[in-house]
Image (cartoon, rainbow, N blue to C red):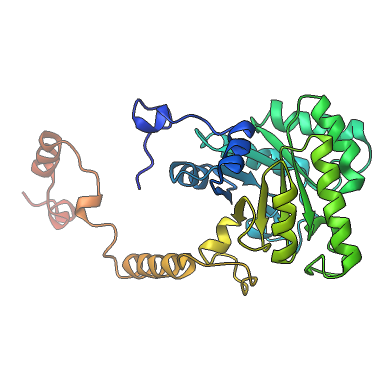
Length: 304
């Protein structure tokens, strides 16, 4: 797939943009919602042109791109930087930006201020925040401020220390009841969609059936309204064993490693660049300079 100019007059330019209402209509019609993360311009272009419905600039950028051990160190500046880059590559998809840890926990005022920056400065269509019932009032405040919110319950990576690791949630009757209550509270508060991560398929399926808004699953089984994965997981670019719910669609690591090794070898053997990959003087100037050149030994001896 070639990366054609973003603002073109082709068929892709006439494809309607995906909105929160589009996602709701897809749920009502039973059409599966496709979602994927993206963290930079070229990746966003590829994902958008592939027809993915929702692009999430996840704080997973911290682990997938920035080399952090968790998502917790990711800052607002980093998220804004990556969201701006992704937005430049998006023409159709619904663009959601993750609010990083610390950007919304202190106060509603901080949260609204930071969320507004994603919409105003980075061209996001919505923000995503983690947490259930305890975030319902914040979701309501953000919605009242004209900011669309995608909620996230179940395994919430920003709570990794409180959860004692990345553990499947909703394995007890009480935990299941809490997840149901979370979904109800968030929908009532105005969330446009809910990400369900790391919960049993049966629970995710029942939440999806009960909810009036779309559910997007990751490690939550096939019965959600849509699915999302991390781009780097799809292509084996995480340098770690995949989670159970990940399906790898290509071995990007092997692809890149092979190309890099061949490039290294070509440079070392001086077979790259070749003449075809080199620039040349204009023919007339080259011939003129060649005619003026004299053997070095004649200059040294003064012979004619």
